[in-house]
Length: 85
Image (cartoon, rainbow, N blue to C red; front, side, top):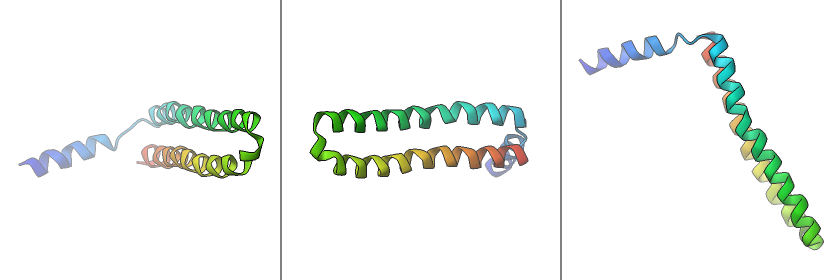
């Protein structure tokens, strides 16, 4: 019985309005935007306080930047999946 309920729930969940999906992606893109700003502001502040640590800070910043941007790309992929379903 629970399999039927899950199948019905999955069927109704796939009918998402494309406009609603666009709003969801827009809201979801706010987090990575704020994250990127915080990452680079921390690098600028750290470099201003300790210029000899710039190399280490840049390495950490690029890794963090990539991880944050992957979240934005996952949101974009989910938007296209939701709008085409």
